[in-house]
Amino acid sequence: MLNAIYIDYHQLHLQCGKGGISMDDAMTQIVEMGLEKGEISEIRLFVPTYLNDTRPWHTINELEKKFGVEVSVCPTLTEESESGIKMKDAVDAKVLVWVKTHLHKGVTPNLVIFVTGDADFIVIAHEVKKKGKKVEFWSVDTSNVNSLIKRQETFAIIKPASQPENPFTESLQKIIDEKPVDEKDRWRFAKIAQLIVLQRKKPVVKRSSKEAVNHVSLLISADLGISFAEAKDLLGALMTLEVARIYPVIDRIVNIDASSNLFESIAFHA
Image (cartoon, rainbow, N blue to C red; front, side, top):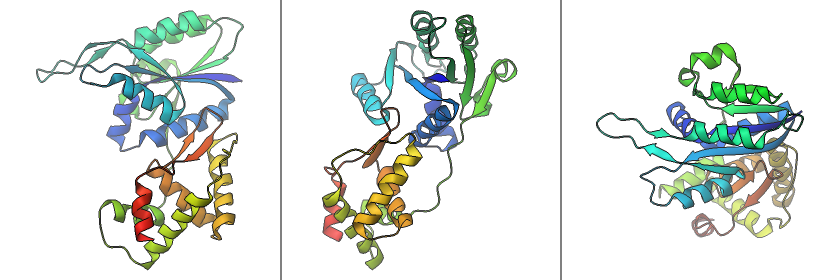
């Protein structure tokens, strides 16, 4: 089955903040859940142009670059104010127009997944069904999902996997916080510095984000002479700091940014 995932960015961002979940973890889990349903034809973020954002195109560019997805810009009608007025955007209207103009009967995708809890998307879901497609709703925070969606639609919860403590992350955090480092920290910094010198120019392409991470971890393990678990922790620490990234939709590419300023500090402490 071929599926398309349409994400209400503002709602997802608020829900992640409320639940203490990173957007990276939420997006990775959305991709993994989508792949379990079949091949993903498209992931599209519908992003309001916040009135207080002085660099809206920079924001949109960063989202496309970071997550490797398409971004549709939606106008903002009102901004939140101290008097209690809530932000009103035209995301639902934009998604409805997109569905009407880009989805057709007898043409893939077969399944459309909405990541939102907004009841306005019920109308959009009916439009999708009229085109002969199945519909699902996903959300991070069930308390923010309208009861109509829970009663009428196929609904699933996005639950990013909890990550165990990572010693490489703890060592790198010491540099960021300018705290003293010990010999174990210096050993980890030396391995990271060695990785940057040896990093492979050719991107690794796998079916899922998990497979890509495991494959790169195996290469790091062989290159640096460390265990697979240590290599996976090392890569995970770099991903947490967004020095290494996975572009989940564009062929699951793992890329390490050797130009990061963080590596100057690592080289000094190694």
